[in-house]
Length: 599
Image: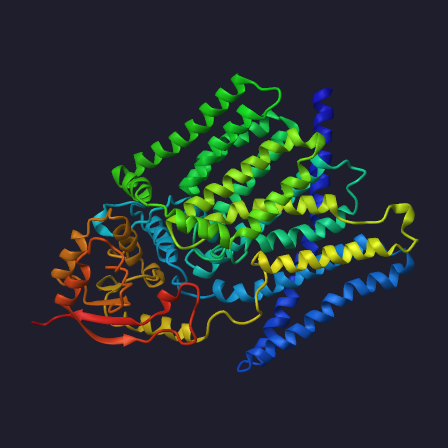
């Protein structure tokens, strides 16, 4: 009977959680027609982008005023200032999401995998799987990626189910889908935090909060500061989904101590490793929670969990080694292990993303009170550890995308704290006008609205790059016409090779990463250049210091550039995309067209 009662309670809890999510889904769907309106406005003013933004601004002013006005007209003296504030926040969330959907549509629908450095390798791994070619091969081939292939293979599987197995836009749509799911899980996490820190009687306006949560978490999951690549072909989107799911399981276990949840937690680190090697850290974080904060503490439980979690990671590594041998060790472990961290760069990234660190800390200040302190201290310290580790490892490179999952979890703590602090009138006092409460609500809404910009979720409703990018890709494709695809080397971009089913060696992203970390053997490409293996070579920035095959920052030159110029001559160029492209500018730059020397 006890088991049956528990099952009934759990089922009721799941139904309640889904019911709270429905308003957020309905609100988020409203962003789609608004995004279409933004598209129509910009399309009608193609040569006047500033004017288009002004028109969109007027539209937004009307849309922002409409829901609060309707609420006030309907409720009049019975209007609740707290509810009115939530309606305003939900409306702002819809408008910001609509701008994101308009903005991101240009990236998602772009047909070539050259938006950021990782896209070429992402598609290359999918091509390998289609051809039955090893995901990791000898390093002298220069065509493998340093991340594990879980994200690429899952993306390909989902694309295959849609009937568009080789569509690059579909691959990107799937990344956006991962990000939306991460926002959904974040909403469940927030709900769990609120329920652990507030009594059911004090948690008012669930439906309205549900309408606020999902748009805001989707915006945080796509923010420009720490999540700039979740719409690109990169592992970040799925890695964020795995991380926030891992955090949800932690919160669920803390609130229930259910062994079934613990079993799911034990599986997460091994699965996470298949998506991104760094996600194996969840085994350590979970063990720390069990060792330091689990009550009543059980050494048997801790040891059993550690054996399963770390054993799962070991099993995944052993399986990868069985498939790809030493080549897997080199690409997935050795190359990444050689990356050095710049503490100064890590500190700079912390300063750049200070807003997310601040809201996570503020969330802890508000929620770690009284009876919830011992319950939530462990999960809060887990978030802080994740955020600090991500900030530190972000010092490997110049981007802050490593900090994405920790930033989203910081947002969960902040929004849960906002629920606890949100000003509102008691139910029996709604009919009485209390200016101090209305002022507090107004200040709270204004503060959150201003914070949105600091969190990197506000974008200008303008096209992110010009239509000249399509001319650029057509000219690249034209250089392949009339000759076998396998004889033309394009430094980065796999869409042409994917279409023709050709596995191409000597790709620039592979060489660039290993040249910087001094882990590469480039004898293979040097030999192929000397033998004039390629009838045509297309490379970007040949005469610039940041040439990916031989970068100025490398302590030891690769000798690729010298060999290339000795054996090939430049016969023309594909001009860079006009109007610029701030994110990933390199892959829209001038391309030199080279053919073998005849002497």
